Image (cartoon, rainbow, N blue to C red):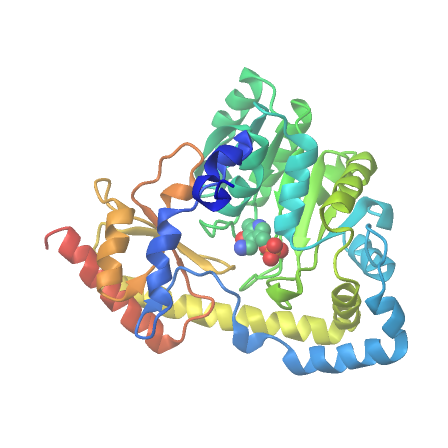
Length: 401
Ligand code: PMP
């Protein structure tokens, strides 16, 4: 009998050519050892997880609704939670809401029901790497559109939409992962109008919606589209950045025929999102005063950490390094002088015992070699100070200064 393990490769489906281990992940494995200060992870701050509250709420649910919490349940999701979500999205009813096991599953299911091999999917340059990983197995052709400070460049976007039909466009208007950019109100309006003009649905990924440092949230693309008649935006958000990512509770809001198709696809994927977790999330968010305080705490913490990182960048980065100052979210996006390859820089940084994520994998068109992402969400003042000093040394070594 042939040893399958020794010769597994020919058995993989053709689509797995686009499911590959990343070299960056291999390099970053090192950096979880003691002594390293890594800004690569992008993990929500663990010191803000509401552990006690989750413990109490879980006990209460198990006492009062234990059987319901532990039994199989509907694929659509826990109705009170879907009602709560619908109440926060203009024009939505629970029939427009599908609960998913993390917005990452939402991306996969949307890819599954919308993307044929060769379908054109328009993405921002850069875009969320995890979305590319979710879509890749469905074999899309990406149309990468450049961004300026305000988000997608309108002329380039219209040219792309005009050139050939696009299946959908994937947009992260609020504190984009990786660039931290916040799309302005006028740009939001223009993009929603262009999408309607070219009859191209928008997939709006709003994972960082709540993480504003100051000011008032801008309307979502979903809300702006709703004001024009609706039906052209699919909205995705999550509890991962406000409660805890390990709960894996997120949602897709969209036109009913699409939501239904996603429900059928989810049946085949995991039947439903864990009921206990959905009930728990509902228990937590229904107390609006507590939930508001929880989000305020996260906002203040990230704002402080962001400020520390800005000060350290100003102190340790060379003058020709550029960055976007975040107004919320979890990331700094840096642009190095044109010749500097951030993958090479990562190797030098790891020698100095620090790390970040090179920017290139976030570009569907393979550009962005001189960009990098730093996360401040989980770092202390001391780590930021020491880590950026190390990164500064690595950069100066690379630039030969
Ligand atoms: N979208 C974006 C933009 C993200 O940054 C993330 C998490 N890194 C996700 C989706 C996935 O989040 P989750 O599956 O935890 O909801």
